[in-house]
Length: 236
Image (cartoon, rainbow, N blue to C red; front, side):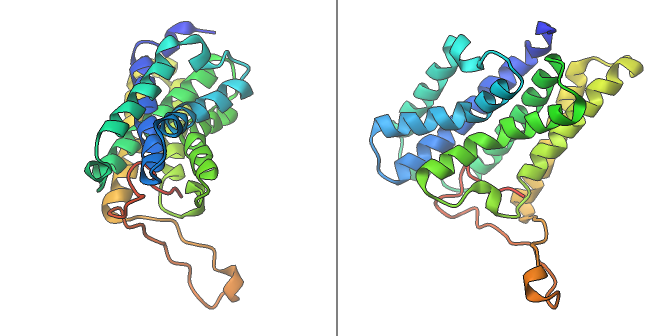
């Protein structure tokens, strides 16, 4: 494996994604008025869940077991959530921050899979898994509807980021481009799509076949001002 693919840009993207997703997990526990131990657990499983599944699938060392900073970042983020009022995290700001983490993780997951010799299409799927599975685990453990059960553009943004990362890394050598330029461009495009979905409540059409085809499917929207919205933007 080419170790340089993971540093230094992707290291920073990794830490940013971990912290943002860990915060979203801790806030779920905070809104349920749980203990700090529960908040720390939710922060950890949300922050590292997607990356753990990715590493197991690509036969790589599980990243947070070998990196002493990852668990520390998750626990520190839980502590921040513990000492701050939940209401300060309400609104769209954390949704946009979550979009940053989503795009960062999708780039990281795809690039790491490519570095481990995974073929392009599975590598792109590793990017999607890295960005989305932590939130799925968070929601399942919390007993709330999974983030994958809504049509708003969330998984789609991760898919765009991952696809651009993988395609760009295949083409970059032919064009004489550095990988970091591909990562930045893919991150920017994925975050732009997610931000547009938040701002304009963009969503994919819902399946309408159960209505006999008489009703056109219409995109559902999400109220980002709702108390559960920060950091948990439901995907499409």
